[in-house]
Amino acid sequence: MRVLALLALLVVATVPAASPAASPRTELKIALWPRGKGPSPHRWTLECAPAEGTLPNRRLACTRLAKLSAPFAPVPADSACTEQYGGPAEALVTGRFKGRRIWAHFNRADGCRIARWKKHEFLFGGVPLASG
Image (cartoon, rainbow, N blue to C red):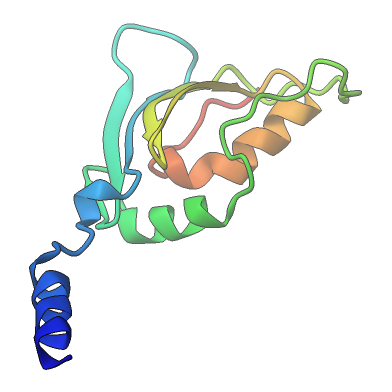
């Protein structure tokens, strides 16, 4: 019986623990055109767990991102949106979110897209935008 207990202890001791690299990663590339698409966007990177990259306030950004439900889902096609223009700013977020590949375009073309932008503006580096 002692031999079995010792053998079980040895097996447990030699099984490697799950490493952080084994968990789904968040690695994003963010581009922002505050005055609309042009040749020189502002660019940042963001990685979560641990929070790394070039985006300002990355730890807070990772915390806020984790709290969002389906953060990179587009505005549903059948949404009724106000006809309100928020300006020419555009942003593109690509990479992986919790291990899943994402490609998300943001603009401020109507009320729905302005609301989506505001929900994600912590990813856009605090850069002032051109007014609409």
